[in-house]
Structures are given as structure tokens and as C-alpha cells.
Length: 169
Image (cartoon, rainbow, N blue to C red; front, side, top):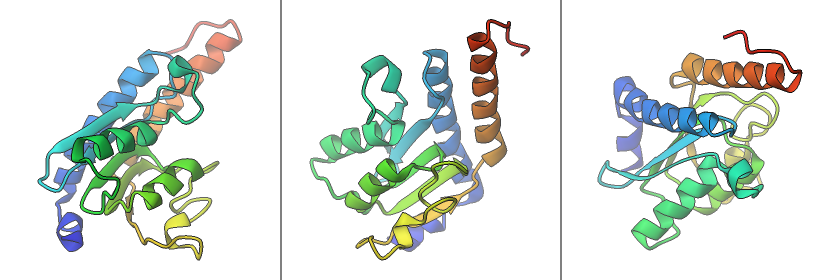
């Protein structure tokens, strides 16, 4: 089963990542850092989808991945998600990576590396660390340019607005 998820074509991974990018766009329009997450269940269907909601909920744990994990666990009525795949536009942070490991996620596919807090490969490698009891398969860089540009454009706009300047784009 795990090997089957890894054998999906690049185009199939891109299709799911495009769904996550659309959710990130909605989150960004609502004043959140534009990160989106989609979880695909054992039958290949989308069982959870979310964008960041930290600002709206005033909740530091309301990252897209955390919300999607909760939805998927409720929908499947179990906390072990070993036969599921998480697609997320930005490499998960330590909190999200820890939750992903706790959920026994089968595969994580992310778009852009996070050079500040990436905990799947870039800054930390929690899935392969001695602290991890579950090895999560990780595939990074799917639609990386689109994901990175979405984040960079959002941050540029918000920096300009915070300085009282009109956004250039």
C-alpha cells in the first residue's frame, strides 16, 4: 500500500497540490498566511481539506495541517492515518510534523521548503530522527515554484501594507 502511494504520477501529485494551493489562496484572502492542506484517504478520495486559520481563530495550533488531521481522523473515526496522504503547500513546522508522525501518516507531499521552520527535511528531519517512532515517507518540491511564489507575494503585500505603502502587485 505505501509503495502504491509513492507510485502515483507526478501529474496526480500536482492535481492534489493544486487543491491545496487553492485552499491557501482562500486563507491568504482572509488574512492568514496562505498555506493549504489536503488529505487523501485510503480509497484515493479527498477526506479533509483546510487552510490556515490561526488569525481568525486566535489559535496558535490552527495550521492547515493540524485542522486537516483533525477532520480526517473524525471522518475515518480513527487517529491512525497510515493509509492516507497529506498534501501541503509549505513544509510542515515542528508542531505539525510531530502531529503527522503521531497520526502515523503514510505519505507527506509538500510544495515549498521552509528555510526557517521546516521540520520534514529543510531545518529538521523529524520523520527520520531518533525521536520518531514512525517513519513517514516524504516527497517535497511538488509545484514548489507556485507554492513559494504564492507565499512570497502574500508576504510582500502584507509588508507593504504594514508600512503604509500600497502593494505593488
